[in-house]
Image (cartoon, rainbow, N blue to C red):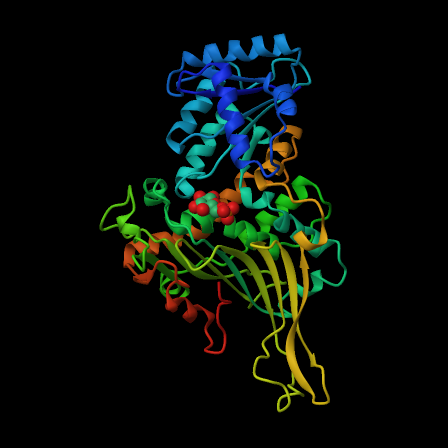
Length: 457
Ligand code: BG6
């Protein structure tokens, strides 16, 4: 069986660790109640080892413990290290693992993989430094940089939607698409514990550099020649590299940044624990990017993300061009909008195609109708959590849904000039928006047309 070894600085016995894990599974697992018989079967393979991450000699003990456990359980195959550690410890931990030889397989035909959590640096320079350090100890093929958005069912379905359906992918192009809106909005703020981290990040680094650019890459990438990890990641990098560089003047026009302030019973960002009372970290960012490829030239990609907004909604909307002549102009009612394909990540995972249809009756009245698909209604089995999927991939060694270093660097190349320009010019100004709202109204200006608007959260 698979051995799980928890390692952290606290003193815990194996039994205490198992108890904690049992409680955690009881609290968070999507299948309830936990079957005790099944649990006790696997719990025997769960162990704990006290490890101070900044103490090199402790890693000798860790190496020994792993060898002993493998011997006693009779398993010596692949080892996966999951480094859920703060960024400042990551380099040290990698070096310590290397020094005691844990970066190499213990036996022939076995393997060692390392899962690394974001943030992958603070900017391009620090990301490179971090990567160089990791590559001194591990091979690129051993590194699994996790972006949990790629483990979400709808996000993976984007590839199927586009590349397994002859009628869909042709729509993903400048010929049909007027603009694309990508939203990852959250209703939660800092929840009392995230403030200190967020002060070092902000929405641009935390969400845009990672999840949002990954979504953009999957929407905009070209058809890969094969569905394998190398081919897919090659196409993602290519499209990220094709995102047009944004000049400081454009940053002022094409970005909006905001911060939530107290409203109703909700506190503002500056009152959050761990946040400076005069912080100007953005909790909201909206921006317009252009993808300079044959397929997408001229189509704006509008991205927005924020904390403490009206709802938790993640979705991609392809807004299509209007029909060339409005033949029903006089007859249709005013609720007609552009056709659109809505790809819902949260809530209610699924997708809808919104087109106009005729309202029943003798009059020729038109109204938008939805061709709707939702996972919940169509499949009896619930989707696995993103992390369930990705952890299994890490164990089996499928890196398709993990980030390659060049993808991470390409994403920093897109956001670094925006951050630099914000810092240098202070433009656009940070806009305060009430907690629980739609975010700053100024984000409408990115759409560039008074008749176009963001879809409401
Ligand atoms: C994380 C960010 O990567 O993603 C958080 O650091 C954010 O700030 C979270 O809240 C959102 O993930 P999800 O799956 O809840 O949309």
